[in-house]
Amino acid sequence: MIGLGTLAVAAGARERDPELHIPLPPRSVSPHLYVDPNGAAAVAVRALEQAGRPGEATIVRRIADQPASVWFTDGAPGHVERARRLVAAAAAARRTPVLTLYNIPYRDCSGHSAGGAPDAAAYRSWVNGLAGALRGHRAIVVLEPDAVAQAVRGCLSEERAAERYGLLRHAVAALRLAAPGVRVYVDAGNPTWIAAARIGPALRSAGVGTAAGFALNVANFETTADNIAYGNAVSRSLGGKHFVVDTSRNGNGPAQRGAGDRHWCNPAGRRLGPAPTLRTGHPLVDAYLWVKRPGESDGACGPGQPPAGHWFPAYAVALAK
Image: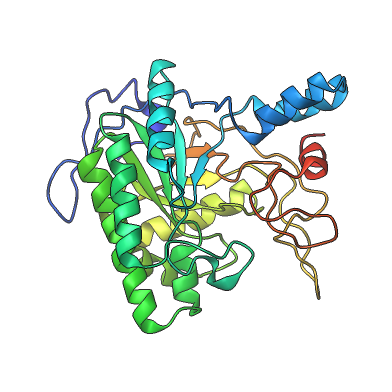
């Protein structure tokens, strides 16, 4: 198997799906990732420039000029058309967009990002709509951050965990059937959360066998090296599956853990990590991605901190300085 960074060598090469015995989509995505001109960082840069604050605008531009994932987190009217516009704009620019789907029922187990689709039927309909919007285009999709790891962790009942695995399998299949040019990576948490020996079987239950692979470190801070070591171990349990790593905020590694320390939620002293790329130099690592959009809050975990997913100006500047 080959990484996304070797596209020129392997033009037209195809893998075979080990479970369905049919070819997987070719790894022919554009080697260039799409920069969303409407992302929160880009909007912030324009606002700072208009306010006559060029110094801050220059700092935040270090975030705005990099390709980051576009998140789809609810069924609000217009989400399908938003996805359709995104992939069409990326195609016109000859770039590959990255999307994160984050709407699984019982999302985040009542944490700061709680929510999600109201039930299984609503989720299947939501995924089907997005899959249709991606039809005919190429993209990378990170599927449901934390969903598998939380099911393993046990914050769901046995019945709800089984339902979750079924919904993830449905999502992988729907995206593959409707949009064969899309490469799906099922989220697998991070190196400090679930042991590789436990997350591997759970990923199989979630349909990773028919996906492009799995994703690591979404919205977390573990070092790139630790993620690669962990990802290689998980991959061995999955017959050599490839993976992607979220490097958006891991430039200084994780914050020190301690009693009462919210080391996962807007921790101070963090930095931007390696820039997004499809050329990683590691045979199993398809990409370094900025899945968590730097500068957007992890949650209202302290005084003056905005809700999860909202722009956090002070944190954005601290990350990029």
